[in-house]
Structure formats: C-alpha cells, structure tokens
Length: 351
Image 1: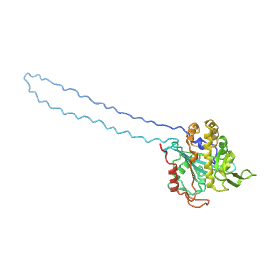
Image 2: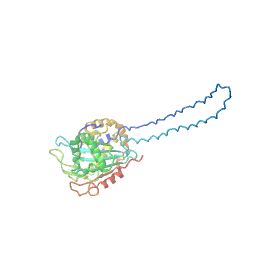
Image 3: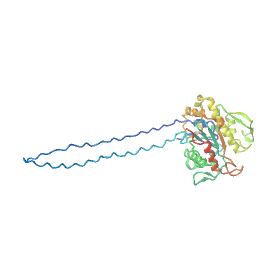
Image 4: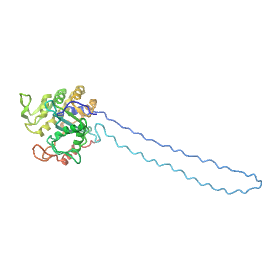
C-alpha cells in the first residue's frame, strides 16, 4: 500500500529508509492417500438328502481374481518460489527514486530526477543509473512510447491514473525500459530533501573539481553558488542547491551530483547508527511517498550497512554512448546499450 508524504525533488536519505521490510517465508505441505483392500470369503460345501452316493462333480475352478491395481499418484508439482517482498525475484533491492519539482510557486509533478539505485545484499555491490530529464521517446510498452521529455511522464500518469497507481506504473515503465526488476519507488520534493538531510546531521560529498553556477538564485536577492573541489559538508539548504544547480555545467553533471548526494546520505545514516532512525523515519513519513512501509528501519539499517558505497557503479544515460543526439535538449536512449549496462551492474544477486 502506498504511504503518502509530501512532494519530491531529489532523493537523499530516503533511499535508506526504504531498503528495509520483513522477508516473508512461505511453507507448503504434502498430503498422503491411503489404500483399502477388500477381503475374500471361504467356499461353502452342500450335502444331498438321497442315500445313493452321488458322484462328486469336479469342482469348477474359480477364476483367480486379478489384483486391483493401486492408483498411480501423480507427483505433486513443486510450486514456483514466491518472490521476496523486498528483494523481488532477482534477489537484490532495486528502487526507483523520483525527485519532483512540485512546490507552492510551481504546481505540477515534473520529475527532473529519475534514478534507479540497486543493492546486492550478498556482495554489498551498489549501482546507480540516472535517466536525464530531456530524454524523449521513452518506451511505455512494447507498442508505445512517451514522445515528450521523460520528466513529464510521471505527471501525465498522475493525470490519468491518480496516486499511487501513477507511481507504480512509473516503476513498471522504467524497469521494463532499462531492463531491470524494480522493487519499490520513493518520491520526494524540495522540502523533503532539506528536512531529511538535516535529520542525519548533513551529508558529505567529495568533488573532483569545483562547481560554480553564477545564475542560480539562492534567494530573491542573492544570486550565484559555489562548491569547492574536495570535501563539502552540506546542510539541508546546501544539499538542495547541490542537487538542483546545473547552469554552471549541464544536466548530466547535475545527475552525477545527485548520485553523490545519495551516496553521502547512505554514509550519514550508517555513521549515525540506529539510534537516529526514529527521527529520520518521522521526517520521511511526512515528506516521502513510497510503496514500502516505514516501520522496518532496523532491517533497513542492516542492509545499508553492507552497501559498498565508495565503489558504487554510477552512470548517467546521456549522449552519445547511451543515447542518440548530441548535447542538445532532447535525445533518445540506445536501449540495447543501456540494458547491457544494467545486465552487468544490476544483475540478479549471487545466492
């Protein structure tokens, strides 16, 4: 069942609050049939009243009854294994993270963040893949495509289906499109990012080079942002700016920064320990929309502790290797190439 929350924008710590959930185990039984046989009675001799001896007739041999064959019991078919409610059929946890730009001054639900994050609970391997917002002609089925920019797809589905059906459909479409089993979704908005990052005491990200955007409006009177190369500790406000700024470079670099922010959030939750989970869950319950329950944080924490975030495989599916076109404002994914990447880095878990 969908648990509602606020609107989305980027996906920071909620990625961790969503990994938990109890694993259901299904047991089956086998029935045995009993066989009952029928006994045969003895033959009876009859005497005659005539004194003369009557020749004894030859006994007519009774036909030997054929044994009744036991019915052949067809073998009970082995039921197909029930998919794990968290890890699905492929044995790994994969979640669709949607960041919505919905806010009071900007109604709607455009998802400028469309990220698929995946964790192999056995090896701890982590992978994250981002679909740029300007992607067009995204397949919605084997026969149809969404021709407009993909950041409008979620809003279009809400108009047709409402929530939570739209998010579930978005999960199906993205999963089938890039060739990966997606178990859950989480949607978060601007205020959710601020609140969740502050709830974990801020996040650390490390930049290979500085990020400068002189065009970003921080407030109505302050313009321009700067993040130096190296380690940056971000509070909620700075984390939101970090996830949104793009005019200093481009949308592909912004998507890579969003992946860094998710990784930093995972580390922050892990470092602060389980004692901080109640506060995090309280915030997430108000600002995140997801189809996973929020009452499995301890289990979630165990899984997150295994995540090898520092060696995560990260990709942004932009041109020209992963999509057609140049650096323009619209391009289509090369689905065969994209699915080759997910088949490598989001392959079923080794059990």
